[in-house]
Structure formats: C-alpha cells, structure tokens
Length: 263
Image 1 (cartoon, one colour):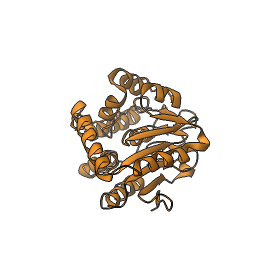
Image 2: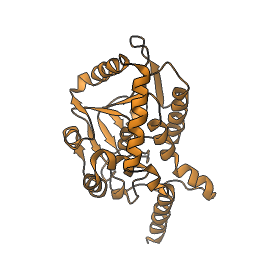
Image 3: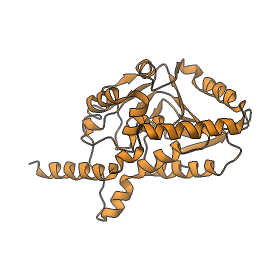
Image 4: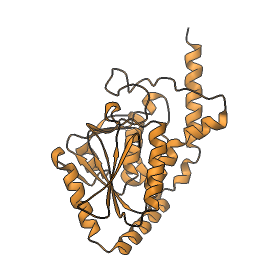
C-alpha cells in the first residue's frame, strides 16, 4: 500500500499493526489513504487469525487530519483552509465528501479489538480515526486539535456521535466549537484516552496490552466487543449525522462563493 503499512507480529500471533505511513506529510489523510484504509479493513474482516489491531502513525505524528495541502505548523494553517478541487458531477463530489465517513466506519466496525497508539500531533480527522478504536494509549507528548469550525467547515465523518459517547455533550461542544488544542493529559482526564505513557514506551505498552487481550478467550472477547458497540450505538446513534456529506458540500460551496465575491 502507498499510505499504510499492515504488519503481522511475528512474536504475538494474532496481532496486526496498522501504521499511517505518510510521515513527510505528518500522516495527513488523502483520498488514497481513505481508500487504502477501507481496503485494509476489508482484509482484516476476512482474517480469522487476526484478533487485535494496533493503529498508530509513522514518524512524529499520529495524523495531521484531512490533507488540505499545507502543514498544520504553518502560520494560519488552522485558520484558513485552501479551496478544495470541486467536480462538475455533484454525485461524484457527494461520494468524495463521504470518504471520511466510510473509512471511519470501516475502522469502527472491525471485529478485532483495536488499540490506538497515539503519537505526536493528532488533528481533525486524526482525532476522528482515534475515536473509532476501542482502547486508546497516548504518548506524553501527544496533543490534539479539532480545527474544522475554525476552517469554516462542520466536523463530519460521523465524528460527533463518537465524541459525545466518549466525553459527553458539553466537552464535545467546547472542543469542536472553540477549536482549542488539548494535551494528552487533558484527554486522559476527560476520558478520551485510557492511558498516557512515556513516548519511548508507547508501542511496547500497546503490545503488552495486546498480549493481555490475546491471552483471553477469543469468543468471549469478540462477544464483549459486539455487545459494547451495540450499547454505544444506543447511547448516541451514528445515524443522527446522516447528512454529514451534504453539510460538507454546502460549506465548500459557501467558501467558494465567498472567495469569488472578494474584490
């Protein structure tokens, strides 16, 4: 794959590590990564040997979020999104606008127990993908940001139901609307991550947790994941954001109109 690494662990049979692998772009998520994530998840859905999946990022980031063509560290990068190419075919644009929904759902629907090993910066869509895994470990230096509203677009990818379940309505509103950066310790205190660990121990601690899970009865573990996922859906159904892609298309259309109206 061009943007992902899918590796089976030689020491822990049943463990697969899925690495976002665009370190030169801080693992920003482009259409290729969306497609490859869906394909990787399809492969895992057909894999009866894989029981635990670790999701992490290569280099100094988990993910800088949706690839907007610039680094999040550049001045103004979290305040002004560049115009994205638009298609004359509205159905094609609608399909592209739901790529994040499909890749996020693919991660969330994996039968394997999923562990997020969150390293470095985690922005926008990176936070969404992190919210799709079952258990999250964050490096001490990791930090998070949800800048979509500051970029004049709504948070989509069916992210709001997931965040509401994990951290509640008030905290979700604050983080999504105020767009303030938050630390790994903040995420731990609010219940978004399970553990904060030293940077150098992130993958070893994730593998130790995977080893513990692999020692459990496979069917009992699988049934427990299915039951807890069903209960989470009852708390805040994902269908509540059925019009995510239409809202994203509208935001892009309005941005294009504002740009055209400027002298």
